[in-house]
Length: 342
Image (cartoon, rainbow, N blue to C red; front, side, top):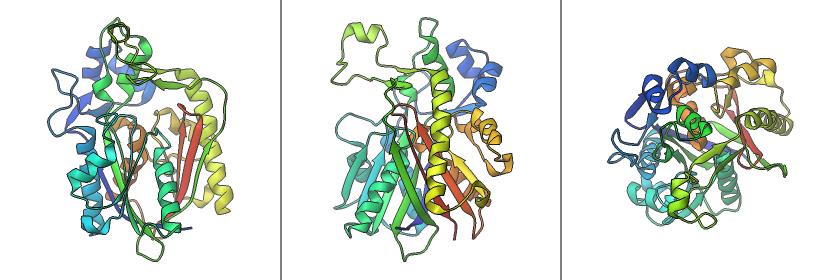
């Protein structure tokens, strides 16, 4: 079924962190960071003097502000929302869930609240849930918010493993939101949503253990920095690229389209390498907008932030088709959808 995009919103933290600042923290040259990832700056919630988020800059704060802006864009008040779906791998707490915190900060009343712990393809998982609820008659207007604040987990110094220092150079914080309503209302059409976990038996390319039940807090684990994110960059680049194009093929098969049908291909901003990979598949630069150079990899929030950015720049016109895609190396899965801009 078709959904309608009634409103868009995004929120980035106040603090802008340049490659020069990151270079001093991680011991990797500013130009080398740009060469590896094409990132030149990113936004972090963490304070200058401590890893904790600055006041009003928690994951739930960014998520609520992105949701507030999406509601304003849709010209709706909070009473119009009957479903809230939040997506994050870096929420404020393990419990209470992010949806409860966001609902409270937005002043939502009695709504269906769902919190998804999902990374790069999380937006599409959320939209699949919303599509099912609307199809079942259980929802008419939903707010979907993807938010990430990974910077408080970064640790710096020569004793920190290199993959973790590279993560600090690559990732940024931010939130994006969509107001999604049933077909028949106004707004661009969201259609052909696909999500697929491939069953790949290989170990995850990205593992973010945190301090959860399988790895509970202990002085030994903390000293070993076991709670930090580990990434096999080479495997992620190879397998993630394959999954990315599987997602595109899955959407185009459902839609009966080809890559030439689309005004833009909006990809999860994993690294700047995505631009050259797209070119190898015949996607010219003008069809492949990016913002990773300014915001870094914002994980689940990446695509809605990019979509809001190009919309705000006036780069979308009625009749444009957009192909949105993401590959998720922590689960070897992918997601995608088509937007018909109206």
